[in-house]
Length: 369
Image 1 (spheres, helix red, strand yellow):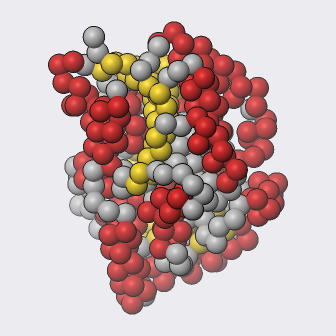
Image 2 (cartoon, rainbow, N blue to C red; image 1 turned 90 degrees about the vertical axis):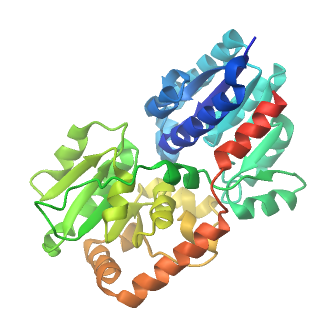
């Protein structure tokens, strides 16, 4: 009889890494087979998981959004717990998404289900007290940032650094260009306004404000797979901007520079080697709460991993059209600045280790099962 696994991811990046993990697990299971039930997205479904609920129904961003949708979140947690009991998995694999997943970890552990956590919550940024729940409820924690192993060790918990799964995702990319240069040979600038509806509506108009100032460049927006195209078209309006869906890596490889909303995409852009500026603007209450509770010197993973400013962070008041245009022109035209940034990106890749995170985690999970 084959093994049964329950995987939970609450956003696009978790869906990507969960899909690679599921594929690796199915290879190891072979003829014995493994049944995977999941909360995730299209990629996990394509990898062979039965997806119960899509992450687009789970992705509430920021303190105020969580408060506004608290009833829905609690209802989802209860539904997940009930589904776990029906499915009776041998183990659960929880991917980041801590507000939800730590509650599921406690429930699963109490029911005697083995708990693996892949991609640690960012406890080093805020809510460090959650380590008590992780010690109690998680059998094995797999971390993807090199400094996280030492952070946990200093607090008496052994975790395993497996490398960053984005390196796996980049290796699997087909390298196809996202846009044709035949009809328009101007240098490409990529705009990545985020993956959640709320942040796209806030970030994209600010990014689009620089388009008119650089008519000799071609601006292309990377669309998130879970967001309908009409959302982008309504924001873009008559601006001379192209929209690309499903080709973000190809777009970044073509781009001379990129404006990127803070999140996993900043790290993807750096690993591809495209000079970038990191952008973020949030609601006044969210920013006030973040400043009060989040204890990190940077918001971008690139700068956090490197321990210094490698890419410029344009946050809140700094994210004005004039500042965006100034930084973008520097990224495009200052050769020394570009070279220094790309050299730092190479060092970043080295620090993250080689590809194989998905295989490492699959090995540990399968042997444990």
